[in-house]
Image (tube, rainbow, N blue to C red; front, side):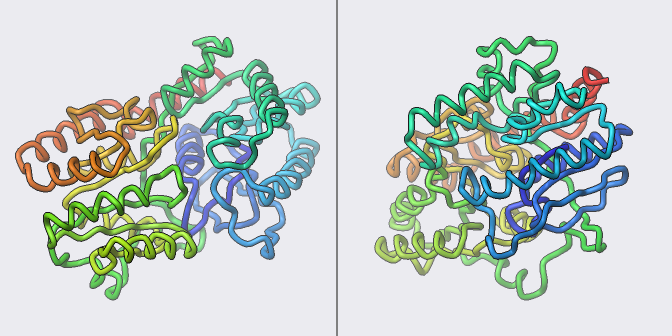
Length: 389
């Protein structure tokens, strides 16, 4: 597997790669995982993690396209070639942009190619504001079409990407919709359990809440709508001063910008920003919530956190955009338009209509168990692996 991400990082872990590797290894597949130098190794029997140099001076690798990733991917290409020269692999499982170079190495080394499509990379260029160049967009579009055409199997992680792959003539027998829907505990090679309980000090910060708590956990990238959430919360706080907003995640500079917005809106004293925390601590914050929220304002890829929110048993308020609506309905959450007024109204209803909140949360949990739980994920992975035999 070639996964151009920092695997496994204490914060901001690409859990999708971890679970894909874990389940494949449990099916008896022996795996070499090539990844960035940043991160800590995880304990998965049958998996050998191979890393390019760390380049600590680069600092954290940001979400989305960046020149730092471009630099690191040059090294990923070199390491991919070296591994292929030293070992004979039956399959190369390429994650995201790794497929762009693995597609051209395939005829040279004779392996089967699996494309793990977590996004449309041409769309990412625009979504993250990396470039407005039409020429660059056309180049990435051509590379994506070529990768889809020459892959022996393609994994799409949401219905929109599944449709996107079909429009590029990927036949059904080699296209697999496998959502990033499981979130097992993780243990590092050094024995540290990433599911370990928070420290006493961390737990004191979490419990007990002063009043009902709205919790968001995720990145603070602009498309996530965190600023929209703070604006909506200002109205919620005006009507219910005992409600607290907790924002889990975000880089320091992003947290500072959100804190400044909360101060301008007069809610900084009831708006708690935790910064980036471990997965275990983030889960404790989610457990303390009265209402969960996903305020994303645009995008088409369903975020991993949606599946965890479905399984939580907590009422969820989410914006009615494609990222959410290809999984969520009004029966399992409170869907609202992506503006501050509608988001505030949805949060207020979730907080005050206990019967309806309980009904939708119960429906959400049943949906998760029926369609996205671990047994469903394993079934999909088994069918995917059978095609590559």
